[in-house]
Image 1 (spheres, rainbow, N blue to C red):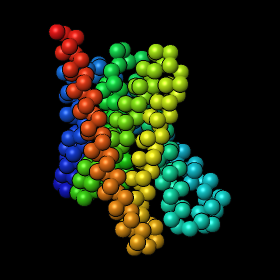
Image 2: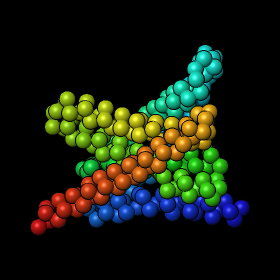
Image 3: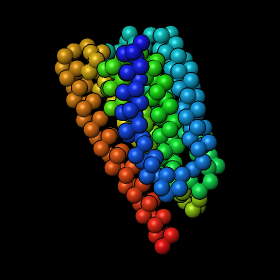
Image 4: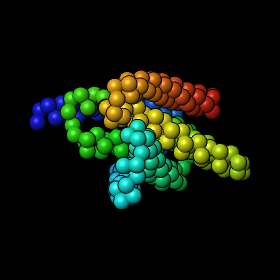
Length: 246
């Protein structure tokens, strides 16, 4: 019991390390009402329920068709991580993220990122609990809180899509809407595909090594790129506020 509590505490500490600094920076520039963040968290739970239902349906189709028995192991892993994990989960979170940001007054880019990020945080928490809580898993999932990172990017590009629409730029709206979905799907797929290979599901030691390399490269690239754009966005927002008040 004590070990489980300790694992949960460590997990939440690491998760908040990624989310809280951007949240506090954005708060200085004017935070959206708390009810929208609470709604985003609840919608994150809903996105998990939707994803689970779709994943169960997809698994039944795969079992009935017998396609998994007709393909090489690595191809099955590739398809499962692309369809069941990245595609279904990201589309579920995208739908809930759009609801979370719907009719939020004066929504800024950083605010949109944070509301989508809250959806991802909620999803991350549930997925971690479902996978079983232990110290190693909590540290790994806390350090690599990928659902938060994916949704921060999704929120960034969705805000740009909404901004383009408000300006009457139809092509810009379509462009950024597609990017807001495709970037998290591709990043999620690369991450999960590497993790599955690293765990030995590819069927060979060479693929385990390749998976480990992919996970490390993907983790570093995603974390560095996300934090860089987050702080750049938040600092630009603060600078704009200071200029407006001058």
